[in-house]
Length: 170
Image (cartoon, rainbow, N blue to C red; front, top):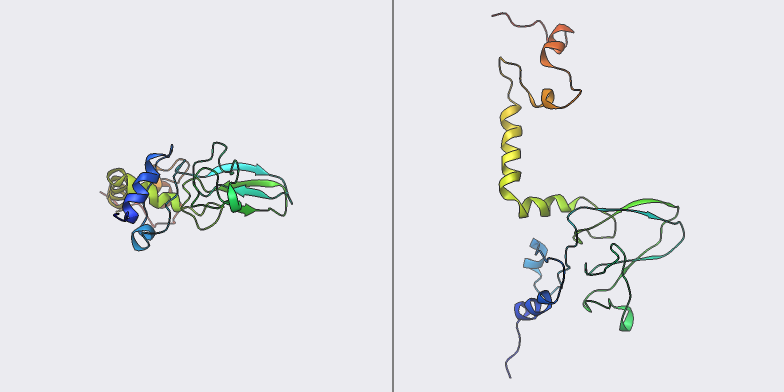
């Protein structure tokens, strides 16, 4: 009887999921750890009530994200048994940014989804980075990235106020 490799077991598990599964460098270093589904690239802005314990979904397959819809045997996730819901108990009632990509170390969003988005969209991320680099260089026309932002002072205004010195002559 042939033994299944970790990749074969993971592929079988991925085919039954409704949300996409994205590997991270962590999963490449530790191939036997389960990989959560990614229901959303970005946070869930969710109101919570203080002193109430919530069960944060760690598998990414719950219908009522970001919370787990139920637990199976031994407190494990009912949808993907390799995962266990993460208990979250806020001190006060507030709105919380819960992780939607399921790559953060805890239930609250840490911005890891920006890295995931950049990995999934290398060309737009590279284009925006090169645009920012090319527009940050000062030119005689006075176009900088700061001037492209709404409400940012124009270079001529900064010269006139004496912040950048006198306006260079022709």
